Length: 171
Image (tube, rainbow, N blue to C red; front, side):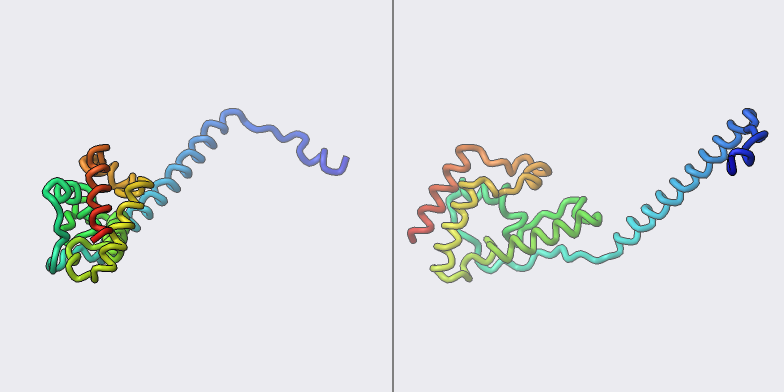
């Protein structure tokens, strides 16, 4: 009985509801505009963070038959050489950060542009690793192939690369 008496006699004027809904809608729209403006400012701001997109000099490339060079050129060299092609989206953050990281990591792991600098034991090891990557299907990565359909390796490409890597591992 204590709280029941307080609300007695109060009624909501039905004419005030549309006005209340309109004010709530305007407030929500204003909040969304603020959020979108904030996100836009962040997006513009992150474009100012520099990214290194460099292709150093080539010191000694991997020697391979023409067919293998063609496959390496379309499926591997963007991340594993100093012949990286930097597409337009590699200039737009945050994608640019991911691409720079992938190229840096790829070159560090295996660089076709400095192949001659590797000792023969290291080259044999790399040939074995190339074979393993091909056999498990992890190279080229799915997200690279999505953006570069020509990098998709056919059964013929896979066979040629496997044979090449086997021969190289025996040298």
